[in-house]
Amino acid sequence: MLYSENQDNVLFHVLTLVLQELSLLCKRDVNGVGMLYDLLRSRWLQALLKIYECLHHYLGKRPVPITVQACVLNHEVVELLHEAPQSGEIKELRRLLRAPHLKALLSAHDTVAQKDFEPTLPPLPDNIPENEEAMRIVCLVKNKQPLGATIKRHEITGDITVARVIHGGLADKSGLLYAGDKLVEVNGVPVEGLEPEQVINILALSEGTVMFKLIPVSDRPVSNQTTLYMRAMADYWPLQDPAIPCADAGLPFKKGEILQIVDQNDAFWWQARRVSDLCACAGLIPSNHLLKRKQREFWWSQPSQPHLCLKSEEEFGESGQRVFIAGFRRSMRLCRRKSRTNQQSCCAQYSSSSYSTLAAPYEEVVRYQRHPADRNRLIVLVGPAGVGVNELRRRLITSNPQQFQSAVPHTTRVQKSYEMNGREYHYVSKETFENMVYTHRMLEYREYRGYLYGTSVDAVRTVLDEGKICVVDLEPQGIQVARTHELKPYIIFIKPSSISCMRQSRKNARIITDYYVNMKFKEEDLQEMEDSAKKMEAQFGQFFDQVIVNDDLQEASAQLLSAVHRAQDEPQWVPTTWICSDAQP
Ligand SMILES: Nc1ncnc2c1ncn2[C@@H]1O[C@H](COP(=O)(O)OP(=O)(O)OP(=O)(O)O)[C@@H](O)[C@H]1O
Image 1 (spheres, rainbow, N blue to C red):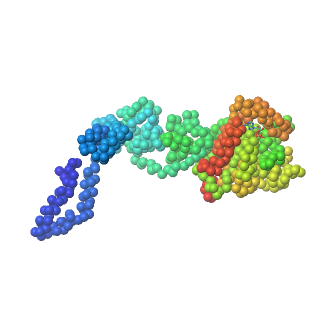
Image 2 (image 1 turned 90 degrees about the vertical axis):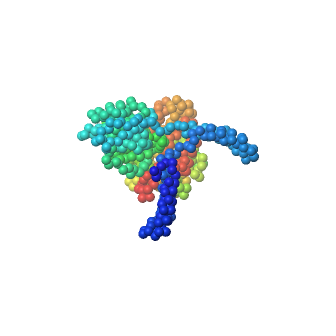
Image 3 (image 1 turned 120 degrees about the vertical axis):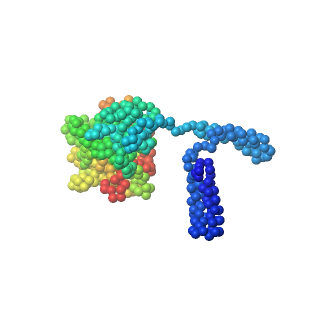
């Protein structure tokens, strides 16, 4: 036999003999022998044969250890060295071979070498009929984890097929099951006529090895998916969704969470992971289209949503301070109580409605790191009235007025004698103000006592152009107006602590309003703050980049400072449209 596992260089040996024979024939000058002799002697043929011999040598060899008893071998070597002449080198070698770390390493090697990591698979059934060549037998070893595949019944043929294979799951990793494969048997049980739930039951009861007999799908789907990242703009609970094909395979998520979308092949059900848990197996989530439809259905099934009446204000200036901080936030609680009796309008007017939130269940995002030469990101503080937004903003700005500044608001009211145009407010005519509103140059605005007040994009831009960090506070409805490619706002939600904590921390705090000064926080104020915070989180939580609980003022101020720096200096998820060079605001 020419080719045998334990006969090395056999081919070479034979070739040498042939060449010897030919050389004799050459001398006798037989026709064509010279050419054959040259061919067999050529270097390229010799090289090819050498490669062949090498490959053949390793054919069928598995990368197993040379010995499974390295410890014994080591011991024997040490003993032999003991008998050898005791030169310095021999002594050193003996010391090395007896060192505990080497012994531990060899012991670990032996343990691994003796283990059989191949699962023991059951023998193939020997009664497979001849007409079943197209079938495939797939054995998967389950280690308590789910199989990572869903099945469905074909509406017309009634066949049970693999509906989808979940990315990162057992079936996916095996590379043996594909969407569209038709199941014939599961663990020897024919699935014909069974409901998908019955098949799932068979699978659920099986432990260890699961054997599928299946007819492979003829056109295996080619995966040309690119990985996308989406911010969830709504909550989703698969266990409460009767429409999900397999609730256990669903991925629950909360608004604001960033999801890695790994499969969008299905128009209705995508596969995704949370970026906070990328090692996990993917789960099913409703596609953009499907979630939008669900949101609409939910929206219309709800009783009409009351419009959030937030606050009105009067001018606000802290001229007594060394650092002048412009802004017009002022507590609404007492204003509102008074306004109810006076029938004053206190509804804010905004250019975007909250319904537009519902229009986008997901927002595509990318990781963005501000370049040091770029303008700073706008910092937006949001929170219920009285929670301490002003206090925290004031503390931040006074801590470093060279770095932090607020935007000077615009107003149509008359300038007071002690005020300076461009310091407390920009004083403009009603026509100019309205023109700014119509041309979308106001982040937010409102009317109070017949005058208009608002924060303009221009005022923010002025601060940013000076290389400073602009810090504004907005009503939550203003967030979407501020979310532009140009301003790239970082939204920080200031959240009240629990009512019991606030009873303590707000003991000496005072509500600042136009009607009463030095008003202490009452129980109903704290309750109102908590309710308002809950509503804000429920409606706008998806936009919050950071949440700071304002319990201890010092601590909250420190958290705000580090959040503001993080926003400027560390990578953050932002909408893809902010980064595209041709993006529109
Ligand atoms: N963590 C805190 N502990 C104690 N007092 C606080 C804390 N945060 C804020 N305060 C105090 O609560 C009062 C209201 O705070 P602030 O005016 O900043 O609220 P606001 O959120 O801006 O609300 P508004 O818009 O109603 O003015 C102030 O007297 C402030 O000093």
